[in-house]
Length: 277
Image (cartoon, rainbow, N blue to C red; front, top):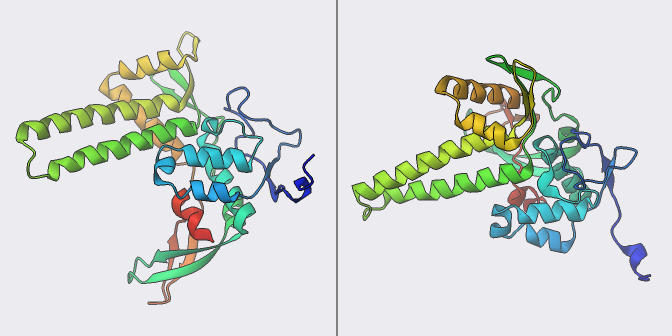
């Protein structure tokens, strides 16, 4: 027994996940009987990790920070989209307290305003879709689900890389043939990213003859072999579904022109945590 153990960090708050622990892979979360997860503050190492651009880009820093602050989450890559913002808010509150300083620009006069945000208010007012709702598509019944953090992070990384590739088009030494090749590769990759996003958001599909398809590979094969009309309908179903998830907007008064406007809080870990001190 370490004589200093009683001085170790301890849980500051307890949270209930919007998912209730659903959609986590077996062994990736240890859900207490109360349904509430203890949340500890970040360590100094955790805070240093979220200042590392490379670790943030590949998601490793966020995953390590979550597993450090909420040990009940054993594999943070498995966190569904429904829980991510709740978890990040809870860690921020446990580390720095509920109040957070943020800035926004007035849409009326472009004046920069400073605000004090109550993170517990945001935590209590995150809007979630009806995760038990189904969608119909040409005789098929789709049960949707929030994508996992690993899938979200991979799509974000691919988007970043494709953006870098498209920036090459502005270089004067790039030939027309090279530009055509870059655009072709990028469009193909973006189409694949959209299919990945659709597949990662489908839990299962029930066919008209009541066959339940749960195999992710078969669902992805269906998406890749759908005609344009079906594919567009799938995308619209997902867009309508994800619109049910939203963070509450803050009402602010502009110090420049005196007008009121609504503003959102950004959840980029590189600023959400580092700039909180």
